[in-house]
Amino acid sequence: MFFYFFAGDVLKALVLENVSAVESVGLSISAIVLDQGPSNVGFVNELEVTQYKPYITTEQGNKIFIMYDYCHLLKSVRNTLLAHDISTNKGTLVVNFFQNKI
Image 1 (tube, helix red, strand yellow):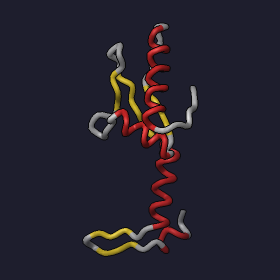
Image 2 (image 1 turned 135 degrees about the vertical axis):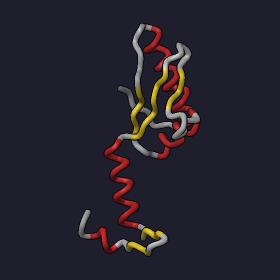
Image 3 (image 1 turned 30 degrees about the vertical axis):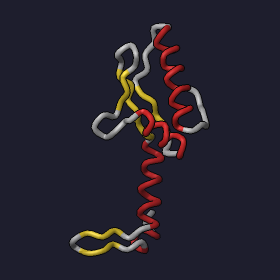
């Protein structure tokens, strides 16, 4: 496990260099898990990872899945529900509904 705090393009170069080093000794990486910090979002964008292609392919031909950790995803959902009303074609659910429930 390693941690970097750089812009997305620099982080991409560093991570790919480390992935290459790991694979060169015969190991493989299944996934990279990260939070939704700005540098990590930039990193994911640099890798061109999407919901339809949630992985990168290494020089060795292995797939490494890129994913946000579920704890931070749940926190983001909670924060969104506390900050914004939800509108549907059946009406609006106001922020106050969630204030005492979360």
